[in-house]
Image (cartoon, rainbow, N blue to C red; front, side, top):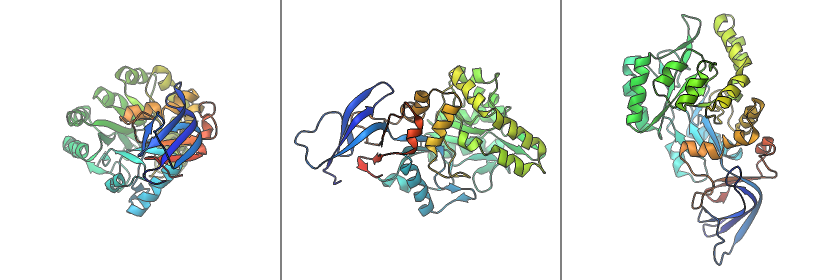
Length: 363
């Protein structure tokens, strides 16, 4: 399409779960619900239309060993695009991916800066590894680098204990989160275990990644404080393999990881039932491939979340949460077209018919 071309998208346009329209127009890369006068060079796309999907936890610029070259970051972003994920929350990366913002053919990214972890308490080459006295300063640094988010590592294996353990004293976490909020950033944290959650929530955290350690004691606290979770169930599926690999050296940790895995679906359903906001994220870019967003939505349904709510967790609600528009009048035309109604069967998300990014058909 040329810059002057018009795209007509017709069929069933899911502006919201119940707000369904017959068509939209794309003019100058933006959405309009009014037919443009004298439109010429019109291309038509038909099907069931959703806002570009959201992967609210991935890592562009990162692989299992650390930062990657720009050409690898580009391939990661393109893989997300092909899956229909057009808005990504990059939940921690040591790579500078700002150049992606200048590419109108790559997904939009909301960055959380680089992970902040305790010394020798996270994956090598991923994070700033610091001690609690430096936490406020590093949170301020990443708040200024990111796009309104900061990422902490809330717990990790303590080799002396041989099990997962919280990383930050309550007072240090409280001061750091307060500093991020002062600078206009929200804070999220990687948390697998049970004992890291209460202190972080009571310290004012905004979101928890994975949240496998939620219990009947902490779920109500999350609901009361409005703390969101991004369960990354496609990543939690790897826990048995990780446990097997650590069995000989850390049997207590391995048993703990298996327990967290076994109750993963019950944990997510309990959080949802209590009113905890749940969003879709895959944790792609570390040990997982990119492009898994459809599989994560399906996992939420398996956990017992109603299909339309699971769909919203990667579309309408997720975009509102990240402060980005959906299929709104005048918004950038970032949308995905499917053969059938994804509200009826979320597995439809695995086969996009067309992907439109900034008004251009890119897939």
